[in-house]
Length: 272
Image (tube, rainbow, N blue to C red; front, side):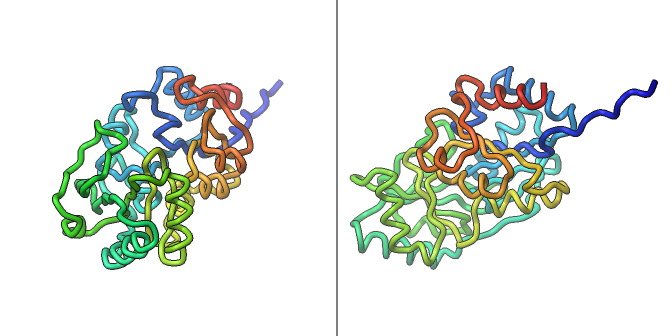
């Protein structure tokens, strides 16, 4: 009697956001989530990280995971080869465009606080006057005036407003400059501007092509509106508990929170 051939994994690619999704407090990954990902990889699936963070703010997480694959960083602007430590793909944002967009937004709602992620694997995040860093443990450089934000190439601009909440700021920015730049909400106090056409789906599609996998074989995990394009590209989108309502509305299912190993719960069901 011959044994049956092993069945193919239910998905060939597992795309995970970091903050609020795979990571727990303190930028840690639980043992259970680590084990579930290892089981999925042993079954033939590949894991790819897809994060709004730029490369310099994610490498410590990759190192802690022993991650040697591709990572989509900077909200899709960067495809990073963790094994070799270099960028396979990068999209810069025109600094003149960024400055013009900020001016139009401020003409509508008054002063906004701004920060930028500079481009490159060793670049800095520059924090302008008034900007409050949502993740104070990540390295930043504070500048004294806005003009200093444009000192070197950037891949995105981050916005905050002293009075409007994230949803309100996102709505206003899209209405004013949505024809010029991509506007997305990536997390608490994190509204971002990037070149049109740059988002998590665009970066993931490029990385998946390198890996030889398509969206029809991809499952994606996320928690914020910046994950919506990724969910649209993937075959199956899983929102974490307490995800933003806009993401829940387009998710195929909702799992437990990041603190309760929501990713592991789904992968254990799918991969055993």
